[in-house]
Structures are given as C-alpha cells and as structure tokens.
Image 1 (cartoon, rainbow, N blue to C red):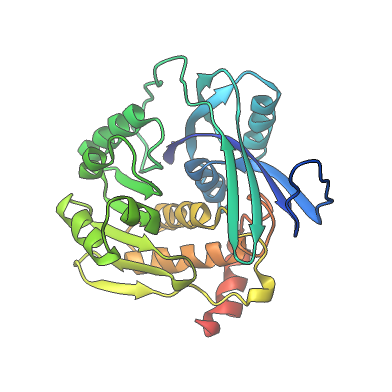
Image 2 (image 1 turned 60 degrees about the vertical axis):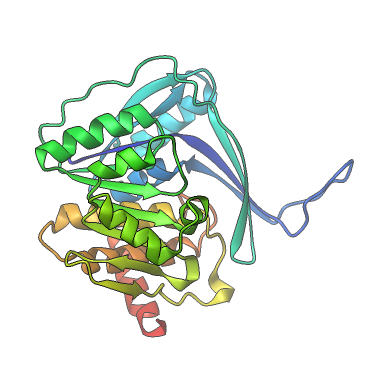
Amino acid sequence: MHALFIGQTYIDVTVKTEVIPTGDEKAVAHDFAVSFGGNAVTAAFACAKLGVVPDLLTSLADDWLGRMFLDMAARYQIPVHARKVRRSSLSFILPRDGKRAILRARDDDYLHPFPHLHIGRCRALHLDGHQAEAALHYAQLCRAKGVLTSLDGGSLRSNTHELLEAIDVAIVAERLCEQMHMTPHAMLDYLKERGCKIGGVTEGERGMLWYDETGNVSRLPALGVPTSRIVDTSGAGDVFHGAYVASYLRQPSAPWHEHFNYARAAAAHKVQYLGNEAGLPSAADLEIAISALGALV
C-alpha cells in the first residue's frame, strides 16, 4: 500500500447545457459525461493516473452503479476496500460560466463498521472528512507512525476540529472559512494552532493562500487557463489534492511549493475537460500544462 484514501463514492453525471428545464419543459444537452465522483475518490483516481496507485476505503453498494464503479477502479488498478451501503450515491453536475451547480443524492448510512487495514507500508493518508470515525482512526494511527496525513477540508464535518489535530497537510475551501466565520488569513492561523504543518485555503481562479514548512504565508496563483478553454471546474480541487499526494510520494523530501506547483497544473488541466475521468491528467499532460500556461500566471 503506497497510500490510503478515505471518502464517499458518487457516480457523477455531468451535463453541459445552456437551459435548465422546469415544469413540463424539455431540453437537449450539448454533451454529457458519466464518471466516478466524490472528493477523496476523485483524488485517488488522479493519483493513480499520475503513476502512484493508492488503496481506497469508500462506500459501496451492491447495485449496478456500485458494480460500474468497481469496473472503473479496476481499470486504474485501485484496490477498493468497501464499506457497504444500500444504494449508490449520485451527483448531477451542471457546469456553466466557470461555476458548477450540483445536486446530490447520498446514502451514507453505513451498514457495517469500517474495515481495519494493515498500513505497515503506507506512506500517505488522504481524507475528505467523510466516514468521520474511520477518518479519525486512520489519521491518528498514521500520525503516530509518522505517515503523512492530508485533509481536503471542503466543508465543516462533525469532527473537523478534532481531526485537524492529526493532520499534517490541511488544504481547505473558502466554504469552510464561511461556515466557521473566518477570513482566509484567520483560517491559516487556526490550522497552525491545530498543529497542521502545511495549511492552505483554495480560492478558485485566485489560486491558494497558504503557509509553508516555516510558517511563511504566501499566495500561489492559479495557472491562467483562458476563459474560452474552461469547460468544467467540478473536480478540479479533487485533482489538485490527488496530484500533490502523488508528487509527495514521488519526492517526499521536496519542498511543498514544488508539490503544489505540480498540483495546480493538474487542476488547470482538469477544468478544460467535461467530467472527472476525461479531466485526469497524466504526467505528460502536466508538462504540457506547465509549459503552455505557466507564462500566463
């Protein structure tokens, strides 16, 4: 096991349309994509596409969508450690003008306790806060063993405050700042107080405000993707997380600004494609993105 990712599985249906019908109206979409979804799940697939295949502990239903997800994971050789639910979860995503509206139907009523896995050779743990008790258990276990722990803090969870005590790298969204009534700078101070060695707040096209190993705060600008090439921003943050974990696993002694430079190129690649799977970059794609977009920062 190179790494362990823990999250909630969705099947994402992404629809490109200019019109959202209501009532008895009908409309025809321009395009659509069906893919795996979920924050840590998409990050795991991004990590695998970049050449470092992680294990994935995630929700799984014994239905046709669950079997479709297992087929997707098998194509990337991702070992899936299932936590059973009755029904698969769905996301309907409507990207438009650089934003995306999302409607989710989620089953997170887990039928069994989370599995206890052997993590003897694990070198990184990535969480999105779903499966709260599993996230806390593995974060504390990995922290005690010196394994890197990473959190995608997309929103406030039941045990976020406690969980952060066991997190090395906490990259959170503006939404979490809003939920906790904090400015981005105040959030960085809070992450430092919780003991996070690296912390950041992602701010979309404005990039990321973050602090490094020394506590120095700076801004990492997003790579300048021309507006005409932005197709679907959904999943870009998840790909960002998966890419920095992959970069760390390849070069654990490199400074974190290098891991994040790699990750922002991955996010810039993702937004140019419809759906999560189509937007997963390879290592070669990232070289192209850095070369083509770096000068536009």
